[in-house]
Image (cartoon, rainbow, N blue to C red; front, side, top):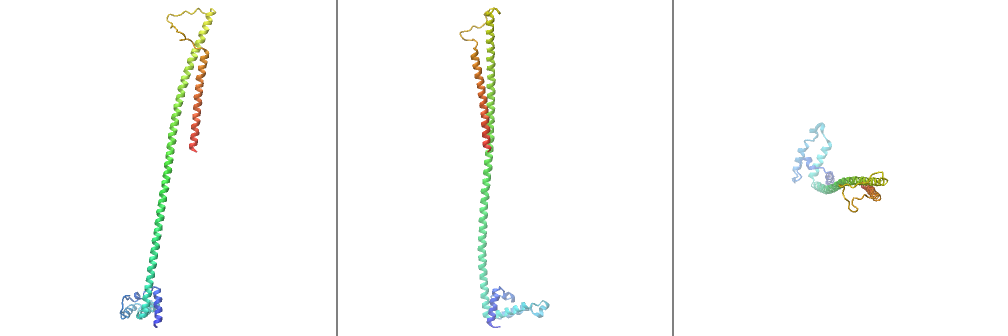
Amino acid sequence: MDTKDLTQKATDYASQNIDLYALIGLDPATTDPKQIPRAWRKSSLLHHPDKAGDAFDPDKWALLESARDVLLDATARGAYDRGREAQALRAAERAQVQGARKRMIDELEAAEGEAKRRRDEQEEKRRELEREKARMGEELRRRRAEEDERFRREAEEKRNREEDEGDERIQELQRRLEETRRRKAEKKARKRGELPPETESKDAPKTNGGEGKAPKWEDLKARMIAVQKKRDAAKLAAAQEAAAGTAEEDGTTT
């Protein structure tokens, strides 16, 4: 086979990344041409038809012979070595590109992971803030309800006291009114002679001016009306306070 054909084969083997040196067991740094036949003979013993028998591989044997011929031809070997160097350079470039691409992908994934972590942290902070707002709102509603209950209870106690005091005043006024009516009836009866004249008791307390004088009916009536109006006003104020509290609770709930 001439040099041109061997050079073409050498180029093809290099492009296919077939290692002819490893095939015949030769160090690529070997420069002594005599070492090539020796390495070939040693390797061919494993693949020779007489040695391999039924396991003989004709393609493998043909490749061994082509490897010997290419490496023995200086021009073909040079083309093969240059082709292998070009292949190695392209492989290194591919590895570099792949490495850069992998680093870029890793950086993108790391950036995405960091962004996701920050989003998760912000979301958790937002949820925590919502929980805190809800807790504070609940606490505020609880305290407001307690204050409303306290005010309602105090107002009710005050109304009860005022009603009791009003009842006592009304009873006192009614008693004095009855006493006045009784005295007037006795006075009229004495004038008609139905009762003996009234005798002043030595132990009876002396009156000075208007002190001890029985109240007039108009005065008693006016005072009773005033007490009743006060009680009605207290009830109306309590009803308005209760209505305002209900409206406030509805607004808070909404």
